[in-house]
Image 1 (cartoon, each protein chain N blue to C red):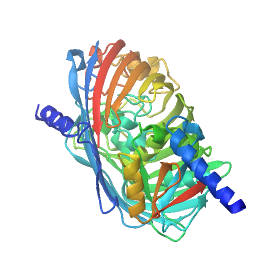
Image 2 (cartoon, each protein chain N blue to C red):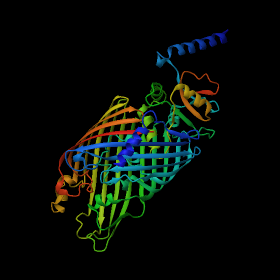
Image 3 (cartoon, helix red, strand yellow):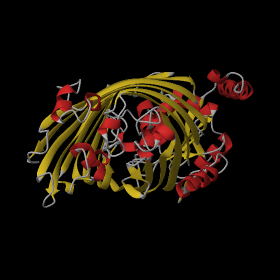
Image 4 (tube, rainbow over the protein chains, first blue to last red):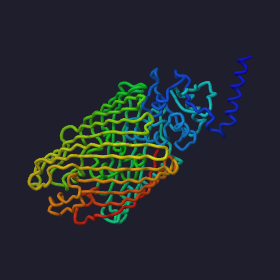
Length: 146
Length: 396
């Protein structure tokens, strides 16, 4: 009975999320997503920043981290930078450009849409990205940021 | 003119619809580039070309490739073509070309080494000083990032060790390196005041180091960086100058504060110069070049930024009015050629993540920031002058 109650609450909240997300952005879970083979379920904020500033390039098992982002002017990208990384989007751009144009690092791969983000992360081993709402795809896993 | 046609073609090619980064092998191989054209108009003095008659001679083109073989090994290189008035003619050069090997890396630290041609990590802007998107304006603060003598500080051929510490209190980053500095004729113009019979070449190793501290989200960042170089002048027989050496250490202290809508930056630099054995006809023996600026940027919208900066630079910090230095030249060079005080107002509009338009106004008091190569006759210098500039830049 309790299990069924919990299940229906989960269903209700994700339904609410789906309905309300476009209107009530702050109420929605915006989280990191990763390829299913990434052997982690949570990262610290500091760790997330290191992956996204391209300074930590490998997962604990040694796999290359492949970073995906939406364009700088995409609303979800701005929210991700602010809420998940606690960085302003212009700071991320500055860090990437400094590495990219001095040859000391690379830039993340820019994808055009959320759908492409989910697809690329699901099909690329070691990939990390972000999504609005929990991943439904079995090839994706959520990475909680603590 | 062919240069201008080339840039026009590139601007079209890199236009928003085509501007997609080139990536291969799952993004491990990346190719990026940029192109920029500026137009400059000054009330007097030549600044990046024949600016009193409107100059188009400030063009920057770059293309780079990098390959991340595995989490430890990165190889990268960039070709740069830069036309900057009479200082640089646009012939392509290897901007950097290096192998980066990460010895250790985890959530708490990173240690690695770079070998090859490496951009010197000097101040906030030196490493990417020729990439318009990474600069705070069309012109970098000239009292620290001199364009008249950029190559000596730009990069070195050698080795560099880097280390980072990531902790709760923030991040510490350090680099230490040694290599051969790269000099060109501009160095001779800037440090000797002319293109004399003989060659001015780097002697021995240039030493480079930097130390930075940043709060965890890089809201606040401070750093100290420097490079020490020795130059050897091999005088030609019968030349005016004797064979001499120039020792120089360039030190820059930097601070940056980042808020959501604005960024505040200040840098201070000091460069002691010692000239030895140049003979009786060379008037200078030692002095300390000094420069500093305060710069604020305000983002009206995420893609629209205004910038204001005030900077001052002196050829000799113990003679800020330039009177003594001018007297040493017998009054041939006016006192105001030994300092520059520049107020700048700029606007940056990122029309698209790949396309940027800039407008800039500068008010100059003094001519120290000018290239002697572009303005060889000191009697033609004007003390008070201003500059209007605009630039269009694209990237992919």
